[in-house]
Amino acid sequence: MTDAEDRKPQSDEARSVFVPPSGPAAPADSESSTTSEFAVPDGLAVPKPGPESETTSEFALPAGLDVAPPPHHEPEGSAFSTPRTYSARQAAFTPPTGVPLVRLTKDVPWQDRMRTMLRMSVTERPAPEPVQRHDDSGPAVPRVLDLSLRIGELLLAGGEGAEDVEAAMFAVCRSYGLDRCEPTVTFTLLSVSYQPSLVDDPVTASRTVRRRSPDYTRLAAVYQLVDDLSDDETQVTLEEAYRRLAEIRRNRHPYPGWALTLASGLLAGSASVLVGGGLLVFVAAAVGAMLGDRLAWLCAGRGLPEFYQFTAAAMPPAAIGVALTLAHADVKASAVITGGLFALLPGRALVAGVQDGLTGFYITASARLLEVLYFFVGIVIGVLTVLYFGVQLGANLVPDAALGGSDPQPLLQIAASLGLSFAFAVLLQQERSTVLMVTLNGGVAWVVYGAMNYTGGISPVASTAVAAGVVGLFGQLLARYRFASALPYTTAAIGPLLPGSATYFGLLGIAQNEVDSGLTSLTKAVALAMAIAIGVNLGSEISRLFLRIGSAEKRRAAKRTRGF
Image (tube, rainbow, N blue to C red):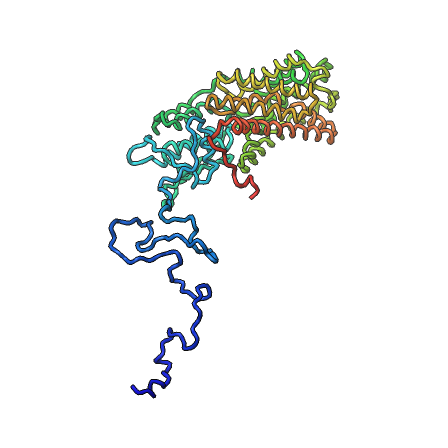
């Protein structure tokens, strides 16, 4: 090749597109130079490939790559650069059984342990311990779900709160090795879903609750069954659990019908004494309540709904009060009617409804409160019907009549509160071993209320709330001492605090066309009822929070309670 040919410029086809053009060379600056996205990042050294000496894991770093420590002086960091504290050798992966992030002590009641886990996310729940309540083929998933639904049905029908029902259903499933369960409780529908893994189809079962009957003896037996299932030392097979559940359903009520009728009379008579009645008022209120109870039983036997049963039961006490007024007897007709209303006010359903609302079960709470509203409307219709005819006949019923008198009798009222709580416990079909404790709890509630209202001059609403809080606190302590439900120790104890007199004066004011005063009294009755329900729930939460009866660690609240 000649020198002329060397000096001749080459064509574009002969020059590669990757060859830099002739000219001044660019300065070697690492920051301004353009790099390829496939280039090895700074800090990663690529050694020469060598033979593999051992088997590597699929999660291990690829051979030939090693994380070198970053330089001490970096002029400028990148969002994609490796953190200083990161090391691929220390990477951890979630095991198949889950990561037990929260440790729960085993010596606390199962209600608190299950409630704590239900308030967690599914991914944060601790892995269950191995159980031996099934054969080698694994648990019978449909039967376990059916058992949990039947247990939840008995608890919900007995008046238990939605959160406690979910905790019991979750405890049953977890006892048989089904940890990925999600129970759901509404007012009339129970459902539970189990998904073995993320790639398997879930199994879902549901059950409808159509009838409710307060039987706290059956409720306590169901709690004992769930407690035995949750105990690792007690080996209860699935067949044994079904057998015990069938025995619980077949058990008869601990008290006969005539005892319930006498208890309703004792409850009404004791309530009339609480509002200032004497011996004649006690007898009249007791007779009216017993007649109303028998009339309600007759309506129930005819298949009438509970709305009409409450309406029929409210008429006899009001009729006896009007009759005594027309007969010009020297008795307080208002005390007679108030005592009869005490036996009908749905305090149990009210407390359960407010408790469901405070714990986040708003659909169930709305349904329960709507049920309370219907019962209350039935009582209003029954009493107003009698009072209207009594006013037309010339009965001198005074809406402003003072109940309780200016000089209350503390000893007599404490005895009446004890009798009222005792009768309420019998009506709720409680175990005989719990009747004494709940009776004393009701007496303590009335002592607190009387000391604050009569002696201290505090408003009735605030006094009622504090007394109900004491009931919830003591009831929760007694329930945790016996590892049982708190309902048998709290529901009957709030009986002396129910707003019977405010309800009566509200209805009487409406019957006598004094709507303003009547609505004022009814508003006071609603405020007292809400104070009872909130006080009971607050006392229970205080016992779990400050007395450390719940989980070993602080219980997490749901995110919805934090405002986002």
